[in-house]
Length: 154
Image (spheres, rainbow, N blue to C red):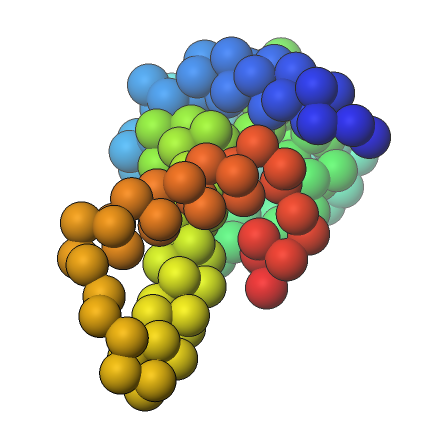
């Protein structure tokens, strides 16, 4: 994949993930989504069990596994369908976007590379201009961001 394709993919994913940004901090209901929706609909454990084609104990276990975070996506899809719902699944960057995530990591990597060089120069008694050092870090970070080398994530 060339750099233009990578940039296009990043841009497209950023737009998609932005749709999830509003739910980023939304906590799961205390008993889990399945239990909360089932009870809000006035649906009994037995009724949901019948819709899922499992025993009431199996449904209770399903609700427990969701609450504990030990449920599979397929079981969540099944539960959503049984509740006449649709499972929506996605990732949201901790930073504002994938682009910001890449930018942050590129800056970290650039700083490591430039500071290693600066350390070597210091050992050789060569003067290091702090302004030039920061400019070198910025330039290196931009180069890394544009090239997206696999080493970015080492």
